[in-house]
Length: 136
Length: 136
DNA sequence: TTGGATGCAAAAGATTTGCACTCCC
DNA sequence: GGGAGTGCAAATCTTTTGCATCCAA
Image 1 (cartoon, each protein chain N blue to C red):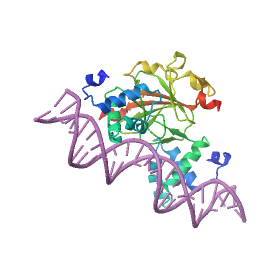
Image 2: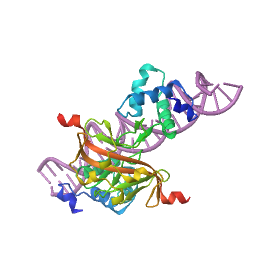
Image 3: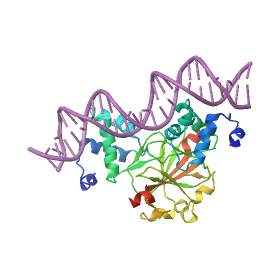
Image 4: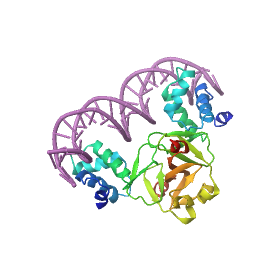
């Protein structure tokens, strides 16, 4: 939580609540999901604040914005490199460990260029049906 | 273009126009971009038709829906496996060849499961600043 | 002929914006 | 005290939906 202070961000209750909720959940929630959960504890909190906070935290590199759910942005408190799996049925996002038998060399070198483009970020998105939904 | 017929889809002028435009452009346009371009040639075409057509073509496997632009869905007429690069400055999407030094074994096996999840689709998304925007 | 496709407008869902007020540093 | 952060509502942008009409097969 002190990482926020290190980044020069003001430690407001709202920001800490968003950051904490993101860390406590493994669901990679969207802004709306975060808002729904927090408004019980912080009845005056507004959606705008949630959106503001999420982009501030993402810019500071404390969280990661995922482009895996086709309908909305999802957020991950873990910025270490790993893959994600999106279930087309339940729409949950799962973390996938960066197994060596299933990784890319490129990711080891953040400064690498590809076909002349400066790569700053890599997201590996798997989609399908998750283990829970397959059973149904 | 005959692929549409093979998939049992009606060959309407609107569908053919969307499919053709997608093939002629390398920009991986969004629905809105496609609509803007086509409404000159087909003044009565509606956005709904563009959206309908895109999801129909995607379901039939003739095009691919990309989750790389955080703000909107983008579409790719090439369904062969390859990576994509998204420029945060100009917001263009570039194709990246699936170089062996930069690929994943997993993609060779469409039926593979990962951590119990059934994988149907893989998208590798690179983000950063494209070669053209770096020069500016 | 006829069921699927289209066009239109309204609605829904996600995100942003403007601005006055608040409160962290 | 000052400026960043917040709350609220309205606006914007993307996508979906309902329904009457149309047309490819």
